[in-house]
Amino acid sequence: INFILKYDSSYNINVKGYVVSLKMKQAKYKFFPWEKITIFKKEKCNLERLIVEHPNNLHLRYLRLVIQEHTPKFLNYFSNIEMDKKMIHQFLLKKDETDYLDKYIINNTSL
Image: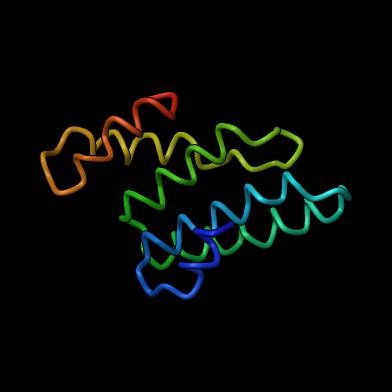
């Protein structure tokens, strides 16, 4: 919650992605099921919008992959897993400024 409060108004796309993903995670702590689903769907749309605006952003693709791999199937949020895996795999093969993420990607996804 502190991260969300501190960085919610950030203009950095990577930070926005992490804020959105944490908001999605917060749905888990709501009492009423409809609140959980409403929050999840709203933030899912926000994450999808960020990805449409920044389709080659590794952080956003990584976040979506982690979320989709750990989201219950009944929420119907799993259609981009293979596409994200393919794109992320290409990033893992390159030596670039995102190499610090490689171990997190490998440890937290099915790659």
